Length: 302
Image (cartoon, rainbow, N blue to C red; front, side):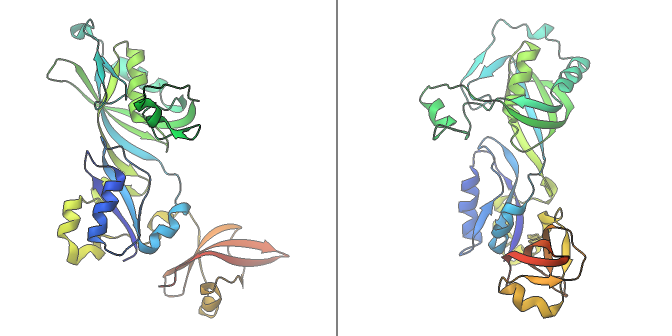
C-alpha cells in the first residue's frame, strides 16, 4: 500500500508512538509522519505509507488550523496544562474583563506576521541540544524570536472552569512553526491575568482534515478496507504542476534518464504521469538551448 492516511492522534501519545502502533497495522511497510504534535495535543497527524514517504520533502510547508482553550489566571513553565502552573491567587476573576470587544482587539494584535519566541520546552536546537533538554535541567537560555504568520484568531466561546477561572475557546489559522501555547501565554500577559494552553486539537494540516481522519482504534478495525482510506501519493502535491508524457518515454524515466519533451511545462518541479494517469515521477523541467527537458528526481516504479 502506498499513499497517505490521516490519523486522529489521541492525547498523551507522541507522534513516534503513532508510527510504532501503525507498524502493527502496516507490517513491513515504511512509514513517516508529516510534522509533529505534542503529546498534549490531539487531532490531525498525516502519515506517509510506502512510496509516499519519498515525496514528503516536496510537500509544501502548509498552513495549520487549531482549536484551543486557554485558561486565564495562571502561568505554566511549559506554557500548557502539563507544566508546573503558578496561579494568580490575587487576581479578581469576578472583575476580569474578557469582553468580546477586548478579546477581538487582542486577537487583531496577534494577527498577521508577528514575532514569536520559541518556548524553552520545545525541540528547537541551541548549541547542539534541544531546548527541552536544557529546560529539564533548570537551564533557561536566550532564544531568538522567529517570524510566523497568524492568518486569523476566531473566538468560539468563553466559559468558566471548576475553579472559577475564565476559559477562552479559540480557532487559530497559522503558518508552520507556530506555537499555540506561546500564543496563549503571550496573550495572557497582555490581558494582565496570565494564561496557559489547556487543550489543543489540530483540525487541519494543509490538505489533511480532521473530518477525514481516523483513530488508531478505527484503523485497527478496518483491516480489510484500509486501501479505501488511503489517499493517493499525489494528494498533497497539487501545488506542483502536472505533465503527462508519451508511453515511448517510460523506460527512460524509469531508469532516471532525462527526456526531451514538447513545450508545455515551465521551469521547476513537475508531477510526471503516464498516459493512463498514474504518477510515475517527480521531475525538474529545464529549458536549455530552446529545448525542454524533464530530469527525474524521484521515480515511482510500482
